[in-house]
Length: 369
Length: 130
Image 1 (cartoon, helix red, strand yellow):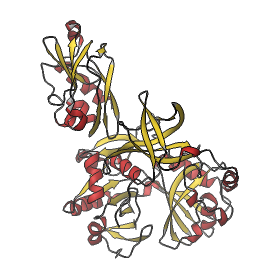
Image 2 (cartoon, each protein chain N blue to C red; image 1 turned 180 degrees about the horizontal axis):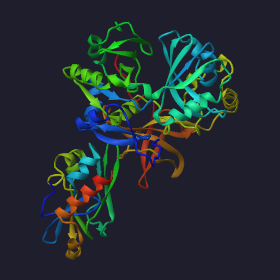
Image 3 (spheres, rainbow over the protein chains, first blue to last red; image 1 turned 45 degrees about the horizontal axis):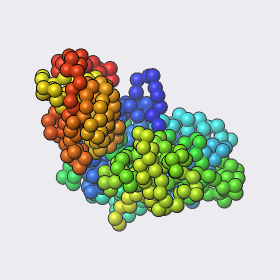
Image 4 (cartoon, rainbow over the protein chains, first blue to last red; image 1 turned 90 degrees about the vertical axis):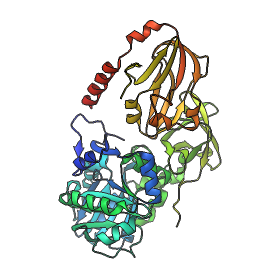
């Protein structure tokens, strides 16, 4: 959700580079970010068929160091960080005491005493305060968001574009693993992660190196079909892959169970914030569930359109969009549990009309392997 | 960029009057702001519109934009080719991607619309605000 701001939006180190490339800039979560360069559809397809380069430096980084770093991560996040090996990353979340979301995030284990969290732009400060609020461990929490530029290279050709530009052999690097090395001459954390549903990498490095690394990647990638991509394509790509967007699909009013993210909550790992509420909710059950749907009638579902059943509003679309690669109109919505089964018929209220839609399995898109 | 003989609204529609018939579309500036257009919803032929009444919508990947009739009138024709080819609005907004034709109820209303020069100034001031 874009945070309304009265102050001037913040800029990433690549702001002028994006403008020079002719990007349309928008305010997103208090940041002036490129939404598209050549067009969302073209950028989206490039990532599905070749590769795309994204500046995602608005994302935040929080680092936890110290002898009890793991204990603090375990207290603050719901997944089991004790299972991580050094060089491994994990999708997880920060929860409220009510079992709802403070944020979703990636936890990277740099060493036994050093964890690196990648969090959503709009939640940087909130997450930092939330983690500090649970501070009774021998560990230091730092908001290091301004210390990193984050680029994402995503798509089936991302690996072959990146390979000659980095100092390390990552051919054996599995998804959700990372390594450290030099990329295009700068020190870099290179993670095989992303938010597009494709193979790809996220690079974290000193903002000083931003232009050099961006330009090197763009030039080296061009012959492979790599194009610069904005937040517009990032959103349609993540939606086809059914990745959650904080502030839309999940927030501090939705529970882990409702969102279908029970798989990242390890109730047996020991105490963590939100665990008690999750156990209660698990016993009591829950009434609504996040589902994927495809429009069957003519129309595009959008965020906050109502879900209708028998003319009654029973839920809300949290993400709705055309899906440029699938060439369908898709979305995510909260619906009553009894109507959440795949194949169920629902309607989406579009400008006063109920337009037919069908509950379908997610992800909408799965990359060929 | 924006034809001299057309008249414009602050909602970024244009109208070209030819006798009692007005052809209506959205401007080049509007299509560029919207980005890739993927859906166009148009009214039924015969519908009577008030000036600045919403008569349909164009949707890009990211956004929905309502369409407003620059003048009062009755819809006499809609551009059905946009149903299968909404991207034409990006390619030819001032020509082939016209949206509707209306029988103009009161030609005097045209005088209240923006000239090409006034529209140009309007979009420049809008751009400056952002």
